[in-house]
Length: 146
Image 1 (cartoon, helix red, strand yellow):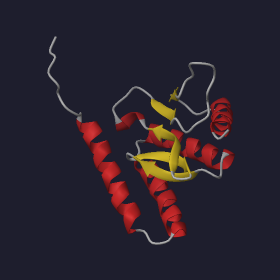
Image 2 (cartoon, rainbow, N blue to C red):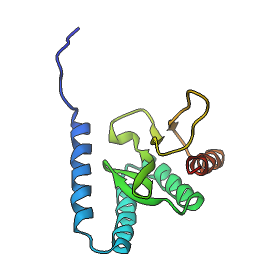
Image 3 (tube, rainbow, N blue to C red):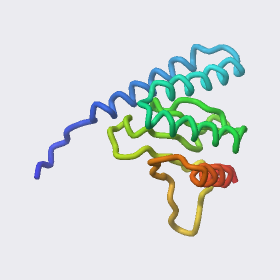
Image 4 (cartoon, rainbow, N blue to C red):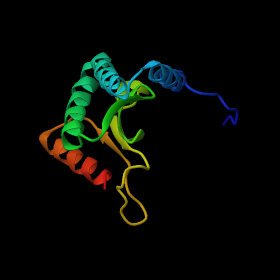
């Protein structure tokens, strides 16, 4: 077993590059309304770029979140569709292809109030978005907002 640090993976470096670019774009935008509209368009464009299996799920997750919690603002976060309240990320969708994983995930930040006793899940694996999954996502997002 090797104890040498290999550094960040190519996927992690790409995500950091995406995050830096997102910050530069945000700084160039003028009004708050322009910024929000462009960030929503950036999310839709990122979803459109995804491989089909991820794209289909991301489109459904996006529709459910924006419907269940219209107060959340779509924006990119490390190159992933994310949803923020007062500028802070509450939840995000991570495509399986993003880090070459077996499944996509819906994750929640510490801004989400999903608290349940002393331990609770903050990420959920997605292999398909069915009507039952959509209902569960809507419930989780509403709960996350407290």
